[in-house]
Image 1 (cartoon, rainbow, N blue to C red):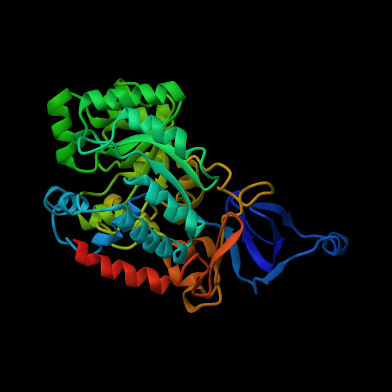
Image 2: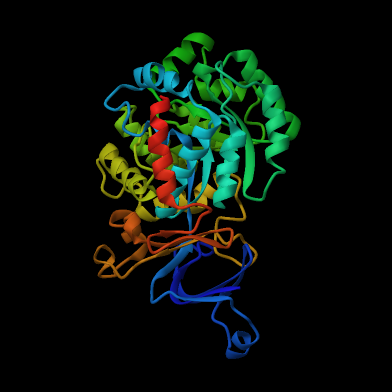
Length: 423
């Protein structure tokens, strides 16, 4: 067992209250939260005891939308509009990817996730065997979202992957989806709808990322992407959309009534000039919100602190209201919200029996002092430099700048740079 003591704990089990408590980890689960008696302490054998030194233990961040292996295109095709960036640069380069590339560049992303306090990714990509191996080798948690589109994949392949990857490891799970309406034929989308209904599973896709995407979908089907997906029965068992910058009132009504998740990606949408989603309105309506970084080709960082600041900051600008999109709401989106959007309902809070996906935030740093309000500090002044420890499924994978993976990070860096010659 591992014992965390002498620190502050934000459990999210009861709002944003921070208490002084201990947390014990037994294998991959949380076994105790509270203040033990001397007798309880004497009855336990701890393999490791970690003195938090007054720092904060909290649930980890979950990255609810990304394309991990796209680290291979970090800073490769910048300062371009989305359509040209995607069709002239990204798609041609992705066509050259082999399994070994997916493995290495996913490993590179995992390093960045861990140093940002992220313990799970909701990832949409391909060559899934290599992708899954990278995550399992690293001990990292991932939820795969099908990326089926006109360039690859099929409803039949989705079903095969669903059955395979939902039974391979506790760290791996799989959800149905497609890349987007504009990259996927209608018959294919209908086939995916049958899979969702057959297995009573949610559906996710890039949705209303740009104004052009929505206009072209309306021209094709006289419906927005959200209306089309809903009309086809894809949301019968829930799901959500990535980006959701241009949802109209009808779309928002569908998201609210279906209990769907908006996964917002402010850094990517800012860099590609896609727009600013009306998160404040969605919050007022009661729509579920989660946060993702998107891939390193369009962001270019995989940093949840930057995403959180942009979520609240851009809403304040959009609304011209400094009270819009409060910091605590954003912190909730990045932790509990993102976990639940991904179906990781046992990884959302610090409670007995939940998965031990935790981070330690160093409060003994200038940007966290003085301590008026810790949760707001995390969003407004927090940095990945404050991430002192990252634990996934009860294993410490990152602590004080050191990674505890199956290979040295320098070997990953070297291999990644050597692979650039393949493109």
